[in-house]
Length: 268
Image 1 (cartoon, rainbow, N blue to C red):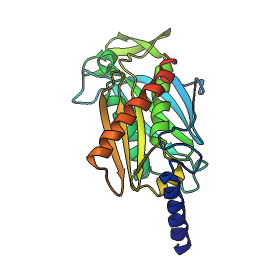
Image 2 (tube, helix red, strand yellow):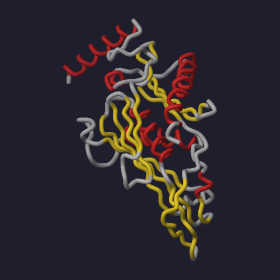
Image 3 (spheres, rainbow, N blue to C red):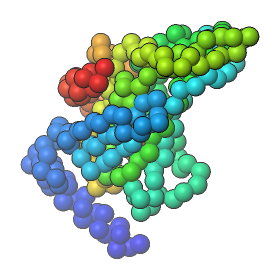
């Protein structure tokens, strides 16, 4: 235990020394994101799917669409639910069983980014108001965890939604019946993009690796929509940000988000 603490402190000191020179352990600049690749249609039986690689972090996401009962207080909207899991092969510390607090937070941040930007017009997913709606279930699996799961999982979820097809249902005897061979694109209104930044000492970096996350003081994930509005923010870590740092993080999120959104738009 003492050795691990000493090693962590030595790595933090090494990272801080590099940050003072505008460098990082993997050779990136402070505001450089790792290479991002997006492949869709990776799960043949899903309604939509995507694999995202952000550096060495990899996420596979599947979308399942089916009729369901609406939430009691949201009978005029379809259902959207995001879940996540970290597979044991992705991280030696991951264990099968009930989701940890970190995994629950991961799913909620992805869900909030999609929901608060109003990416989907859920009103168009109603079959019979207050009785039957279309449910969209997004399930993400982390197959390689090397930092910044928030952004990688968000990009995979958005990509899977953009590439998915929605089955058509007709109402017969007040029950939804699948119309074979007829599908449509999801009712997309905007494309959310999350950008995660970490503060280490007085330095702000984007897309932190696992080593950088291990010694960061604070984390901030900002999700913007196509119109350039900030729609969701999630803070993490043991410390906070100054007002000036939050403003700077917002500017970075808008700038980086625009570049990533262009990559996602190609999937439409």
